[in-house]
Length: 142
Length: 142
Length: 142
Image (cartoon, rainbow over all chains, first blue to last red; front, side, top):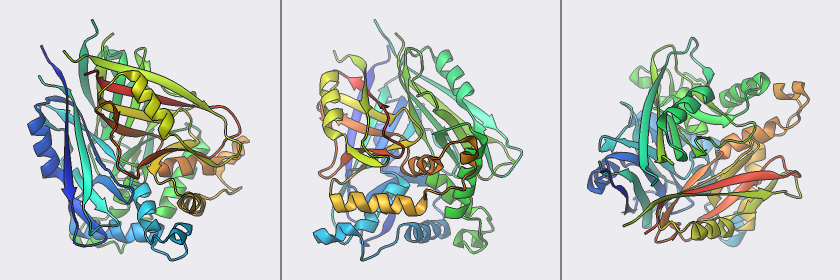
């Protein structure tokens, strides 16, 4: 009889750059495999408020287009009120809100059930320090 | 004793227009009913990176407002770097990121537990070809 | 043996202002505790199409920055087509789409498994009337 299970792992990242897009699909796929869960949902989220998770293409030009677009819609700017506290990263919070801080992904037949071009990215907007990502898989073991 | 279950179906769409908003609530409701799941979560997502899912109103004027607003914030434009690969749809990726590629919905008493005006839409930004949507319901059968 | 469970509660809010950010973390944490669920996912969503849920900082300056930024990207404006129906809140729909109408949060060891600065906010864009939020926790009781 299928058993219900929840499996949680944490990934720690430390990006070289302040802004950086990190391809996470292989790491998340490995966690799904280790979970032993065959059918269910896989939740992925940074545990921080200046980073996001998004699902899209690995094509380098598009990744640059996304970064340019985020800078246009949520620009770095000295005048944010948040900076009166001594912070300098209000734009990182806004960029993270724009992309959404979490995603859920389907798991079918023991694998991430993604389309041909769907890839998971961690979007860092205030890096150069250790950041944690939680991955939780909830579902049936058989 | 309530049994834990996961139920998955795939919807295939082929929109007449390149950009199109497709009302999906009846199809998703039918899948929830077929699942036999009485309480849990319903995950809905395109398996593509140029389409999104959103929840909002069926009013035609508002649907036009949403499309106009997306074009303003993530315009079609020849100059995207992604287009150097021969693609012409970078704006479709950005529009999809803005609306988010997936949604989760609550299931209570065997039905989608939505508010009076909440309706599910598939937002196509690069259509006129077959596209797949995955719907996965996870929860208890009684 | 761990039991699978789903627990649902509804929160009703009536904000004093038309636009208002309401900190919800304590209420959601109390629901998770009452659920008896030790490991799983917690879904939070308004049952309305003019409000959103987001996860970010409680710092007042940043909350103001977020509101200013939303007004810039999705401004109140008389000319929306939706207003031809007699409505005056099209910007509320767009602001809600920008922040996304729902979030999922991880539950580990009987508590919301959030990072140090992650807090849950209800973002109201058409308040001064009763609005409902659904919180559903799905997971294992031990």
